[in-house]
Length: 394
Image 1: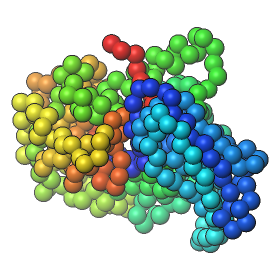
Image 2: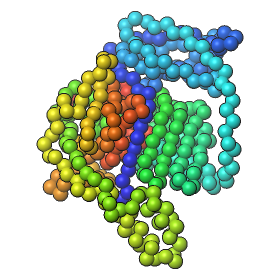
Image 3: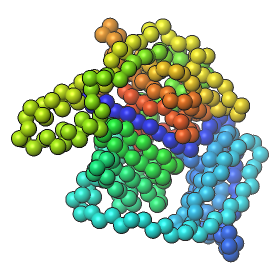
Image 4: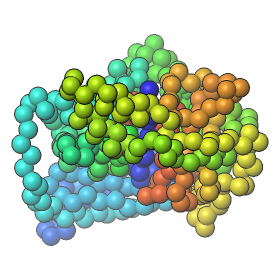
């Protein structure tokens, strides 16, 4: 099976435990000062969201103290974001929105068949293909703007308003403003950025019990779980191990882009030798001289405090080999190195090009996110939880 890669870049804040914060204010136009009603007001990647009333007033209540990204969005106006620090004192924040300048984009001519093909690929790469994904339903699929670049074998997508997905596996309605989404068949890298709001779905007692179980299953072993355990110095007790992995690119294997282009070119039934050669290239390991240093790394060799309270940095010169010992991996990742005598635990390789940051909720943010291979690369919208999610104590 081809390896999966995933890069995420979202505006994620951190929170703590008490729920007593409140943000209020009024939303108006910058030019006429007229109130703006029905604007979406939310704290990015949480369950805290509302809409402004007809007189422009809004309220976000029962907030956990911490630092958040406040987002205001409504069609016809420029988006608004602001970092806010929620505490025990109420916050009064009046917001002015500017009418949005119409941006003319190139007209993309496509047939219904091509749109469906691109959309199906988008759903697979953005929402996922696991059991949870089978219970995810998009309410407004045509809000997604799609463009496929044939020469680059790359799919791009964005939305002007919320893409609304009902996740009946985890019990959330997820509203996602997609700023940018790319999926490359040449590199097997999927990346996206944006802001999202989670809303609890109504359900019966039995449904809520099932959602509770699936949320915990999605949380334990996830990147969020790992980073929360890392800053709290609880990797061992939570089931994580981190090791150093060194490796080199295989010089006998062609570049991934060339391999995919050749396979596509020769896959016509008339070039059997050529297609077999390039399929062998595709099946060849991407790396060689791989070596895993089995001694667990001390946390202070990868984790660093920053000047900002509650924000941490990760820096490491080689790949981080991250093992979660409480779950077994069910996917065969061709390019993921695993010693023969090592149990088939869930494993992620994090390639770090420069220091990156995460918060107390265990969420990476900024533009220097690591590249994940292995278990975490499978994580799509179908398995994502809001940052204010907390599992039962165990």
